[in-house]
Image 1 (cartoon, rainbow, N blue to C red):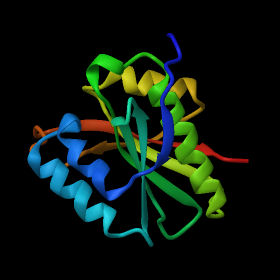
Image 2 (cartoon, one colour):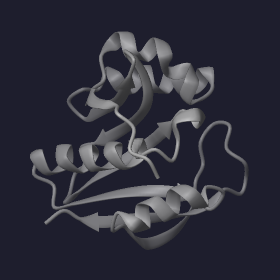
Image 3 (cartoon, helix red, strand yellow):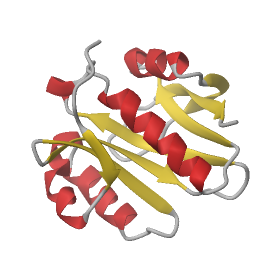
Image 4 (cartoon, rainbow, N blue to C red):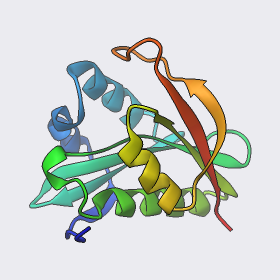
Length: 149
């Protein structure tokens, strides 16, 4: 893996115009809705050449764990350290908000992401069937968790 230079920062409204690279129009709508919930969700973007090339959402859930979701890196920039940088930044945001742990879900159809999360210290805590618009059915996977301290 080669580390690629990409700045990780909080998502700005104009970044959302580039989110079609991460999914369907419905996914972009979802991201726009999430952006309006700044009190409960922080969207982070990885930016290279002034364009978002990766993103992650951090949900400030009740309890001891924040949830990381909707992590994506554009295909041509994968396996270059951007996903790792996004996850580490998401963990830092969760810690800044007082969380003791973070959790995330990964579908069985995405073994590369699961290997990344395991390498970063996440452990499987439960089997799940992920349901969302456009997902196959069934859509099995696991919920993973990592302590921050």
